Image 1: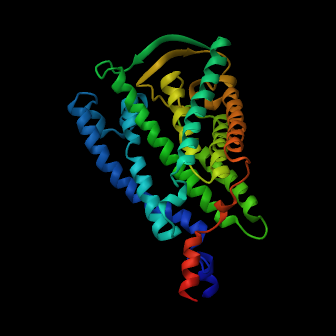
Image 2 (image 1 turned 180 degrees about the vertical axis):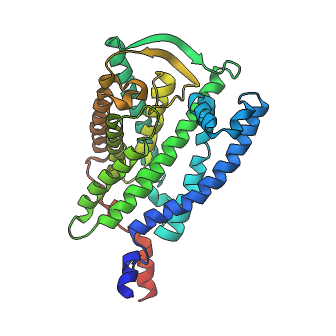
Image 3 (image 1 turned 180 degrees about the horizontal axis):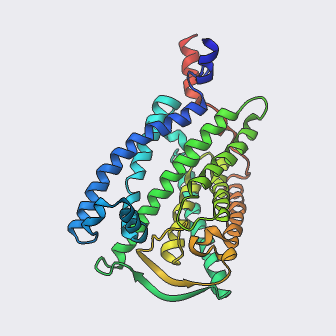
Length: 348
C-alpha cells in the first residue's frame, strides 16, 4: 500500500507528484470553465441579440453559432473573455492545494527587473512582427488596401481597437500562466532527478510544454501540419525568457504584442483566426504560402519561423545585457523551498 501511495504522493515534498498536479489543475479548470463560460455566454449572447448583432435563430443551432463566432471578430473576442479568470482561479487553487506554493511563484515576483523585462517583451513582439510585414511588403507579398479600418463603424475605430487589445492582453497572460508558469514548471520539477538533473529537466520540460502548446493550436481555423510545428517553435520562443529569468515578464509581453501587431496593426490572421475588428493597416496577402503562412498568418510560414528563431537570439542577448550572463534558471526545477523548510522545522 505504501508503494502504491508513492505513485501519487511525494513524501518528501508532502504534496501530489507532478503528473497528478498537472491532471489536478485540468480537473479544477473544467468546472470553472463551464461556470464562467455558461454565465458569460448567456449574458453576452442575449445582449448581442438585444442589440441586433446576432440572429436569435443561432441560439438553437450549435453549428450556426460556431460559424457566426468564427466569422465575427466581435463575437470571437467575447468568447475569450471568460478564459482568463477561469485560468487564474484554477491555477490559484492548484497552487494553494496541490503545488503548495504562492501564486507569485508561477512567474510574478514583481520588481523593477520584472517590469523592464516586460517592456522588452512588448517591444520584441512588435519589432519581430514589423520585420515580417516589411519583408512581405518589399517582396510584394502584401498590398496595403486601407488604413484605420474597422468592421464595426458604429463602434468607432478606437472602441473597435480596444476590444482585441484587451483580448490579447488576456490571452498573453493566461496562455503563458498555463503553458509556461504552470505546465513547464511542474514538468521540470517532476523530471528532475539523478538522470537529468535540473538543467536537463528544464530542457525536456520546454520540449513537452511546447509540444502541448502546438497541439492545442492544431484545431485552429486554417491550421496545417507546418503551422502546428511552427507553433511548437513559438513555444520555444516564449519559453526562452521564462527559463532564463524564472519569470513570465518577457513571455507575456512578447505574446501580447506579437498577436496584437500581427492582427490589428498589420492586418494578418492570428493563428488562423480573424480578430481584426479594427486594424491600422488592412492588407491583401499574396505570395508563396510556405513563406507567408497564407490563411493561418505568419505563424504558419517560413518567414514567421525565421523571426521566432531571431526572437530567441534577441532574448538571450537581452538577458545577458541586463544580468551579465544568460543561462537556464535552475531553480525552476526545484520544489517550493518554503514548504520543505516548514516541514523540517515541524519535525525537528
